[in-house]
Length: 235
Image 1 (cartoon, one colour):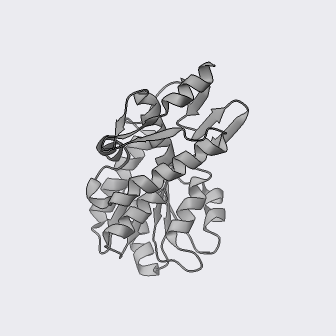
Image 2: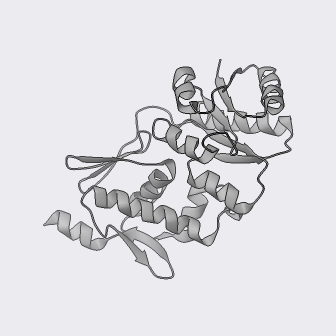
């Protein structure tokens, strides 16, 4: 039985979600100690997390970042915030989806089913672990790890998606719109700076591996892995 962890400080909403989701055959746990969300996540090891933004102690963005350091399980934000930037922030901080309050319980369950299928079910990747290699770089998409020589960095889900796209397209240019379509299902929720912010983080991860100037900006087109890097590795 798949397990859902609810992180919601409004008892009425938490109880409503718990009762409804249980009716569909899932195991459901609600967080009680909102200053120890990560500890409860580790203890219960859920298959999916429903996460509010406005929480005591630390907000949902913070807890999503902490979860992403350890897991790639689906995280769906549920919040009364309706602004586009709130939804951008949820995605940038590692969330997979966003549901606004008030919500229809059927929509919540439908989204839970969809993300569980993608992560573990009929739409999930099957067989051997995927590995991408490119002239000294080794990338493990499922581990969210990038290696170069003896160095290794851990990636966020968005950083991993960008790097996979860049490596797959190399030496061609990855267009901005192509990257947005790859990383976010609905571009309505993405402002002009969202991709720039994530690309800056990707560049920082390459720098941590000793690969400065790894990502080249192609004006008016998009991004690609730098041709200079290719020459350096061959020399």
